Every structure is written in structure tokens, then in C-alpha cells.
Image (cartoon, rainbow over all chains, first blue to last red; front, side):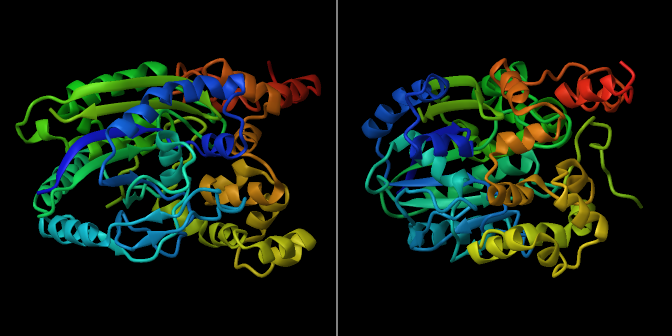
Length: 284
Length: 153
């Protein structure tokens, strides 16, 4: 049977993608960001999964106001990097895993989460920047990826508690798949940032670090934090952090297994407008 | 029964909820159209004519022509959609975000490198943080307004 071996969490700031694509990673400003991922790139080589289940949000790219799915699972064979107005990022196309994705969709919907199934979708920086941070600039991504898009653009977005419960359903779905696949689940976005209005540029290091502490040690309590606290403390776009709770909910300890091991933790301010947070948890 | 909106007392912040989305529907869909190169070219060639193809209010069109992002957001725009205008103009997210504060690009970048804007005084309307209404605009625009006698400092 398939199993989730690790969960990984990272910000997905578009400027990080631009720094990689434009070969600016050695500039001092960016060095401070990329140094925090040196460990992670090696870890990724040492712990290569068969499939990555990648939770991200679309930034008015594949989904305009035409359709706003709260939870959307990508079941296609491949997904192209999107043109977000600057031309597509020069990164490999994303190969999907239609068979596992379809299995997860059926299982999770039967567990009462009404997912939207997406068979055609371009993927934006929310998905490709985490892959770049973890894998560098390969000719092809190291394994298939199942994109899982969460609406965090138009309120109300799903609650932390709902995301956490969804993660538990995803774990059950993956563990009921017959092939012995090694699956990682990634939660992306955040940390504190606000991109709009006179409060633009808000950063809250204390809150972010408490979030990281609690994500490791008190995920159940953290999942009960209401939206308004994210907005007030971590900025209007800091709400993206609810997506991390999907990945955390999928870890074994939530279902009575051993506590996860913290393989890596990193925090830095700023990347463009945003606090960068990153965590790798291995299942015990 | 009215909807629960606990986020209306956060200073300098507009939450893009279903009501804002309805208000800004055409404004945001116009922004989406700029993801196609042909549309960007037509918009650049004659902004007013291109805007007149969309069922926006005159106020929304004027806010776009002025690149007044705070006004665009008040009228239902969302920053991820408005970013398409920025991309058309060749401006980064940081330049766009900074433009909403009154700070120069350099002032805003320095604030971010210095650790960003503090949340202290900026959690609730009525406190005294730098994002509060009575302290706008910030940075150079604020100093200019004060010098012109337009702002009480």
C-alpha cells in the first residue's frame, strides 16, 4: 500500500522563482533565502518520493472569477507552467499521476469532502516555486506531482479546522491505494505577508515562529485558530498558511502514530514582501 | 440575517469577500484579459478605448487609468488580479504593494529588508500604528502632503 513518508512546508513567493530563473541566487539578498534550502535540496535527493501531493493556491491564473473551487484536485496526465503575465517560467512541465489522483478524489469525496476534479489546468508559481526550491533546475522534475489547489483568494476560504480534517482524509485515501508508493505531501504559501492597502508589508516574526512551533507540537490546537487571527496577525495574504494544515493533518501522529521527526526548519525575512518559512517533517 | 464579517476593523486592509468580488467582477475579469499578449497590446495602444469594452463603472475605469490600486481595491479589485496590470506595466509585486502605502520604492524596500511593517498598533482600527487612516499617506507622499500644508503632523 502507498504511504506518506514526510510532509514539507514552504513559502512560494513569486520573486523567489524569478531570482532562480534570472540567475540571481548568489546575490547577497537572495543568498540568505537560498542558504536555508541547501539542506533541503540534499534531503530531497536522499528521500526521493514516488509522488508529491502538492497543496498550493492558484493566484488568479487558472481560476479567474469564472469559477472559484474551494478544493480542486488535478487529475490530468500533465500540467503546463502558466503564463502569469511575464511568460511561463522556464521550468519543466509537471507530470501528474492520474491513477492515484483519481483514487484520492474518489476516496476523499466518499469521506464527505466535496472536491472539484480538474482535468485541465496550468499551474502557477504557487506550485512551481516550491519544486524549484527543493529540486533546483533539473531537466525534469524528479517524480509525478498531484496538484491540489485551495481557494485562499476570495473569502471565505476554508477554515484551518476544515483543512486539517481534509489532510486526515487524504492520508486515509493514500493509504488505501494498493501500489507501494512513497508519497510526500507538501503544504505551501505564507508566511506572514500583506500585499494590499496601507498595511502592505506587514510581517510578524513572532507569530510566524509560534505557528511553526505549534505546527510541529500542537497541530490540533493550531487548526482551531480562526481566519481573523491570521488576517490580523499575519496579514491578509498570511491566510495562505491554512494550506499547511492540510499537509500536517496527513501525518501519522494525527491518527495515533508516533510523533514526526523535524528534519529541517528555516525562517527568514524578507523575500520581496514576505516572510519565508520552511519545515520538513518525517513520519516516525 | 446579515453575514458575519469580523475583518472590517483591520486597518488599511480590504478583505476580498463575496460582496467585494461581486462589486469588482468586471474590473477583475478585465485584469484577467491582460494575460493574453494581444489584449495587452490593445490596452497599451488605447487604454480608455479598451476599458470601454468592459461593463465597469466610470469610477473603476478612472481608478485603473490613474493606477490607484487602493481605489481599485475599494471598488472590488483584488491584488492577484490587479497584478496583471502591474505585469503589463512591467512592475513587480513589491512595486505595486509599495505604491499603496505612499512610500517610495526605496523606502518600501528598506522597510522590508529591515524586517517589514510591525503589527504593533496595526491590529485594530483606532490604534496608532503606521497603517492607520490618520497616518496616510506614509513615506515621501506623506512628507509632501505635510509640506504642502495638507496634512497635520
